[in-house]
Amino acid sequence: LPVIAIVGRPNVGKSALVNRILGRREAVVEDTPGVTRDRVSYKGEWNDRRFTLVDTGGWEPDARGIDASVAAQAEVAIDLCDVVLFVVDAMVGATSTDEQVVRMLRRAGRPVFLVANKVDDSRQEPEAAALWNLGLGEPHPVSAIHGRGVADLLDDIMKVLPTVSAVAKDEVGGPRRVAILGRPNVGKSSLLNKSAGEERVVVNELAGTTRDPVDEQVELGGKVWRFVDTAGIRRRVHMAQGADFYASLRTSAALEKAEVAVVLLDVTQPISEQDVRIIDLVLESGRALVLAFNKWDLLDDERRRYLEREVEQDLAHVAWAPRVNISARTGRHIEKLVPALELALESWDTRIPTGKFNAFLAELTAAHPHPVRGGKQPRVLFGTQAASRPPTFVLFTTGFLDPGYRRYIQRRLREIYGFEGSPIVLNMRVRE
Ligand code: GDP
Image 1 (cartoon, rainbow, N blue to C red):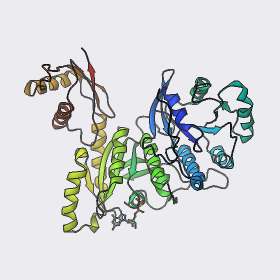
Image 2 (cartoon, rainbow, N blue to C red; image 1 turned 135 degrees about the vertical axis):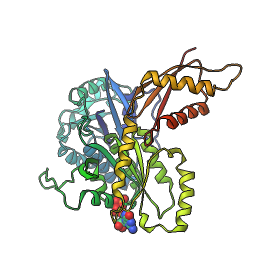
Image 3 (tube, rainbow, N blue to C red; image 1 turned 180 degrees about the horizontal axis):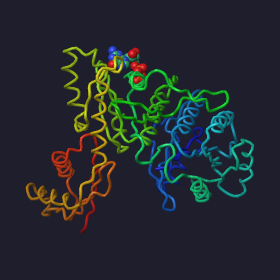
Image 4 (cartoon, helix red, strand yellow; image 1 turned 30 degrees about the vertical axis):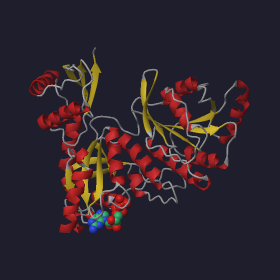
């Protein structure tokens, strides 16, 4: 899907605009600065056009951090999104931070919409018009809270939004798209350098700036892969604060472009909350997943026993993901990533014909019927695979299935069909 990013200083109304675009009722909130929202990407729709909306504003820094935070948002938006909405508070006018971001955005080569927010009625339109001098073209006056102007804005966005994401290179048949993820120092750059070789072309797209290419083609195991957002790996961002948010934002946006994620774990360190959070971002994105245990050369027997226990405890929910043990620094066994990636992608692409799937359901429900709840026993009438990438099934039932029973169905699906490396989505339609 094409990706739209929302960028802007704190308090200009980015979340209100996100809610308005998504058509959510709940009022916005978060007048408290410093609130971190984990979620950054949402599925939206306008006039039958679907898109992903990335809200880059989840980290509200204190006054000293604002420039860094907004610059980081703009950088991610430019690298990883198709269209950028730059939100300015029309009642405040353009600040020096806004001007700084504008300089970045003008070099971006992506469509940028200047959104003048908080124009709650027509008498305030002149304030919006004053933003012409930012040099980003015509300001779009809106009131995110009241909805004024938002429909016109979306109509204008749809005119330039590509049907197929240019950044995600949605075309079929090209190299498969891999995101290399992991917390700092797990060995992402080492893996990239070993796979890609140290030399590479540095594209000098912009006068006076040397930009890293956002993606790189890498040959591994005799096949060409597209490693997405390698710019995010090569660029070492040092931020006094907000580095976690920046990393999550970059990870989420990179996942939009990827088909499969390789999450690197450092075997010399305990599995951390941050590792698990990154894996959860992959699950939420619906991408295929491979786990790579890196720095295997440093593993001793004692640590190895702990590691096995940690994997059992902390990674039980992704026991279906292929695992490879590698050493990115020496390059040892990195070619083993290839069969793991291929397996995960094959699962991710799998389609089970409806007849087969219903035979599977019939057998499963006969062998292990749903427990009776309050005198009722929900039955599965029929099922079908509605989509692949990831495999998404819909069950038509006579009542809500217990979470335990749904997990049982998932487990059986994996036992019979494998699906190694791919999440499975199970939806229900209840017919009374
Ligand atoms: P990144 O932050 O995830 O990109 O991590 P780097 O690739 O920069 O690696 C962080 C540090 O770990 C560097 O000092 C690497 O040399 C080291 N390192 C990475 N992979 C391995 C490995 O497989 N074995 C060993 N011994 N060191 C590694």
